[in-house]
Amino acid sequence: MSVVDRFTLFTQARERLGRGFSRTLVASLPVLADAIEAAAMRENGGARRSMLAAAGLLRIEGAERARRALVQLYDIAFRLLELNQTRPAGDDPPLLALLPDQALDRQILADELAQALRERLETVYPRWLARVDALTGTDASDARAPLGAGALATAAVEAIWPPAVEHAWRPTLRTVVLEHLAPPLADVLADAERWLDEQGVAPRERPPPARADRPDDEPDAPGAMEESPVAAATD
Image (cartoon, rainbow, N blue to C red; front, side, top):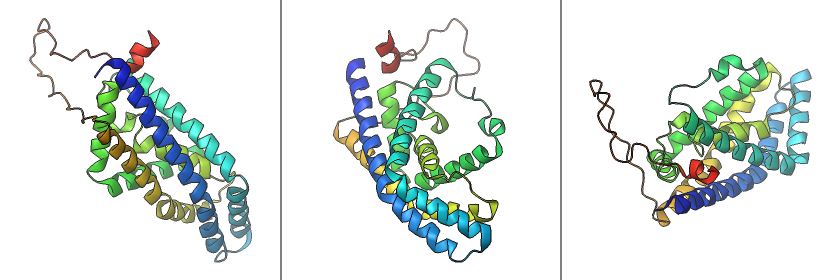
């Protein structure tokens, strides 16, 4: 498969994933609002008012929040593609340590949502990552996968996170998100994986680990310097 073909298929897979992601958010935000309102009835005082206000915003701003989340998903995908081309694996900044408290809470919830997606997809998920790797020409780790569970979860949590969340009801928000958002988002990833399979994109096989005693002048294995379609497209 040529570099152009791989780049085209990657773009189509990203767009398919994005459409499913956006539809899921638009359909799920009212469901999340209902669940938050129901939980609010069991609270008192400020927590109840905060939860009811958050539910109202999810209904009023649902379409706009879904649009912003889709933009963020594409931005995350692009940034991770660049990162995989310019920085070696394992050279990642300590993101959680750099975030302020509220952003840290959002990232923790995104990590939990991403893990829920992986668990629901089981063996489908590593196949999806390997098919995307076949298109990008890289062996990206799960944490740096441009179309991985982490990217979807981070964008989704940004869409649903209220302007103010009191500590008292953050566990409720976590429960609602994992119960009502993880299943449909997992379906979106599964659909995209099936589509790549139908297009004939085989999972990329990871190369064996390099030998520690490999001589410096030993030639690279074939394909070791494989050109990424992203890099080629920017030349």
